[in-house]
Image (cartoon, rainbow, N blue to C red; front, side, top):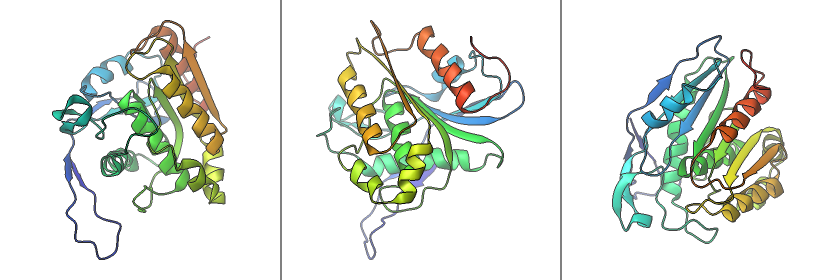
Length: 258
């Protein structure tokens, strides 16, 4: 599947990149289908590896959609091509944001969710760069549009970000404060962020700063969890908390963790 991000500028004849997304893996619900979540892998990974983990979680009412990012040159690897939701050379608030890549990935996620039945709750989650893309989707939901001005078409009910960071953080607060509707949507959207204190890939302070920026911008329904000794990976304690949080916030039936 490809997404050709057309220019939002009137009269612009600038050619835009076309992004070829990889294979999408789907984990079907084992009980009554109540929610669908698009789950996004990290840099250099693919949708298959996460689909295998998600299938083992005690969440029988969730359908998981695990897409694979486009393969592209990535600056942080010196231009070496690998699967990536957007390009990036640095993980910091001062790093330039690849708006075209972010918008293309957020639109791909929204397209995957847009065909779900109307009574199904929709969510986005991810790990590392996938978590960053999930948080970017959360900001698009709040603003009601992508950063290129095109309307954001789906209504999110939950966002989960593991070991990630927030792209486009510098301008978020002003953009959301400029719209009563954006403030309302931001305040209503549940977010669950987790980060390891020993993360040597995405520093803990980046995850913590991202949570603070989101909270200050109006995302009031936000939980930030830290884990002692956790590096850039997941552990059962973390996934158990994610399962409990999703069950509570999406009003799921079926198994509940104590």
